[in-house]
Image (cartoon, rainbow, N blue to C red; front, side):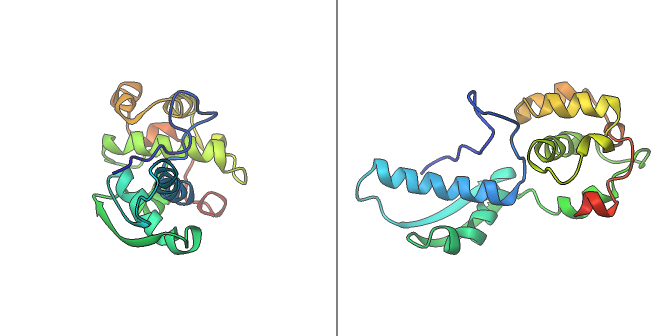
Amino acid sequence: VVATDYVGLGPNSLGPHAYLHTRSEATAVIDIVRAARTVIIGLSETWAAAGSSQGGHAALAAGHYAHDYAPELDFRGTAALAPASNFEDVIPLMRPGIPALPRAMSGPLAAVLAGMSANQHDVDVSTYLSDFGRRVVAEVGRSCGPQWESILDGTRPDALLSKSLGDDTFRD
């Protein structure tokens, strides 16, 4: 059993974690399998991925990329428990004043926006954020999930935004 160190997490990371960025999560999962095989000589090339929440998302992504990214390994399957999914369908609906979105969505939304801000250079995420949203997204980008609740302090997701995330530029 190995645990993935996602790009952007950890004390020596160079920037924000690209939360729910499919390719970086997948390659991190696969690379930890490769790393384990260099440390433990004779470790089997047969492997599977499992995870919950973001880890479930990463496990699904690893399954998607396994054959092409690591053809030397024998990938057998994925167990994804409560994977973070369908954000691409929900995020474009976000806009200032949207009624009754659960506060629990604020942390994941801020983390996705922080990851996009640092890694997605074809859209200026800051132009979609309120002043408060820019401060929160920057702080969430430097924090781990358990800290998000105290950073957000009960904020609704729409308070982070100055305009809709549903335009073509953002969706692309």
